[in-house]
Amino acid sequence: FEQALREPGFDNEIGVAFQPIFRLVSLVICSFEALARWSHSQLGWISPAEFIPITEQFSVLESMSEALLRRAANAAHNWPNRIRLLFNLRAVQLSPAATAERILSILDDQDFDPHRLQIEVTETALLADFDMARENISWLRDRGVSIILDDFGAGYSSINYLRQIHFEAVKLDGSLLTGTDQAGGLPLLKVGQFYLVFFTSVWLYHMTGLAAGITADKPWRATMLAQGLVI
Image (cartoon, rainbow, N blue to C red; front, side, top):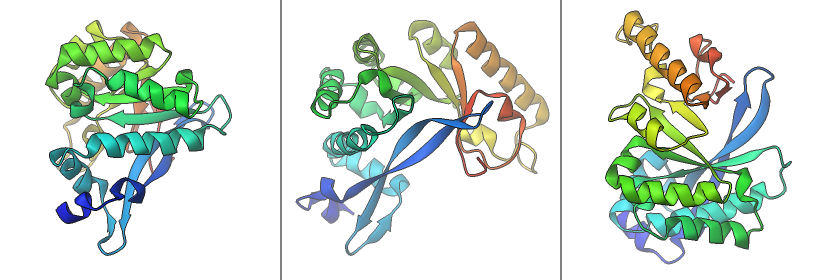
């Protein structure tokens, strides 16, 4: 992996796949999430869970992410205007002061309307440098970009962030959607308490609830948006 990351043209080997996000009331696609995919000539297909953390260690995440955003925005440019593009940012990307400027510059180059872009950030990303992250988020929102909080409930201070930053939507932590009805899954009482907090937060802060990793017909159908295999 390390040698492959150092090869010239590494960014060109990273492809992009799009996972649809549905509005559950109508099952109409409202956006697509851009996902990084790497197929190396010798190593074959490499899981994002394996190569993305390594790109961060070798300081190539930023260049790879920018190349990915260009490809994604170029592809999404010809989609119907009602369909938006969702793009993920990691902690190291939210910390630099010029992050928002670079993102907006890429959108300008691709002639992509910022109002059609959704940026997904994790609690971990906010925790790394909250003040700078909030500044970048504020700059993006001023240009029309929507911000989604990922992995709600995974830890740290979800509710605290909701008070300080306006998010268009919150995405349920995927691990909390797995095995709630199976041995070893979350106890039903804790599941109920979590959903109470989640939906109260969605209502209180005027956000949209998004459930990811849907693999079965479960109570999260009460969310407004969803993505996953069963959909």
